[in-house]
Image (cartoon, rainbow, N blue to C red; front, side, top):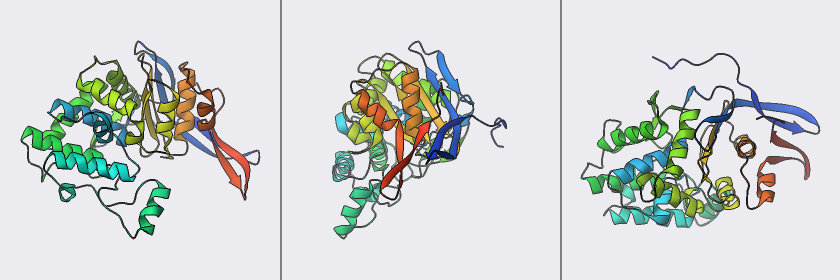
Length: 326
């Protein structure tokens, strides 16, 4: 039985303008929470369930730490991240596996090319191909396996929704979001995927940054903020945002999802209806600005607020959040 959703159209969040002509529009929902957790701004229907995709990962990492995972620093960051498949990411996933006495043969994520196109080209030039370790979720999968070893759980079936690890993950997701999981699916990496409202995702991220130091929640948030290149990649937008805004935690998810939280408890999340990833960051920047976030380097937010469109070798337009969105 499916989850009921509103049939009224969501608002346009992003316009794609080429040569002064709006050629495409992306609709969706977004929510911004004030420092006290109340809703400050919203657009569309952020209380309806979505699949957060990889924005679930920090919550899943909390479940792992609660279950005995002892990772810290960059290795905890990659456990909660979606890496670009760079060499240091591969080495990090291997280190996690080795700490549990395992190898890449234990991974159940699919073989893929690196997300970063430049890295993928370098890998291909070296005569290498797709591997499980290059897959953007290998850090999470390696950490899931290490958690199973630490807790004395079986590893062969760690992706089974009935496995103790996945039961702990669901419990953590519901705890952090303050709501029940609306549906359970299968993510692109093969792991169980838990549906939440966009507002629930924002609440979960807020719970990470406002938790007491030393708690599993805060350990995950602190690791991600300290090592943003490990949660995404050297050239990724999430890394640039966290570098530009001290104290910011941000994580993307496939199909047009973004979620963030700020040191004082302000938080937000977005979902682009058509799944477009190009629309994601301009809306996130608009939402950060609507919440009054002051970056250390405003030029970075200005740069990320739009995506340039080219015609030949010239810039002829841009992808941007609609004016006065929030």
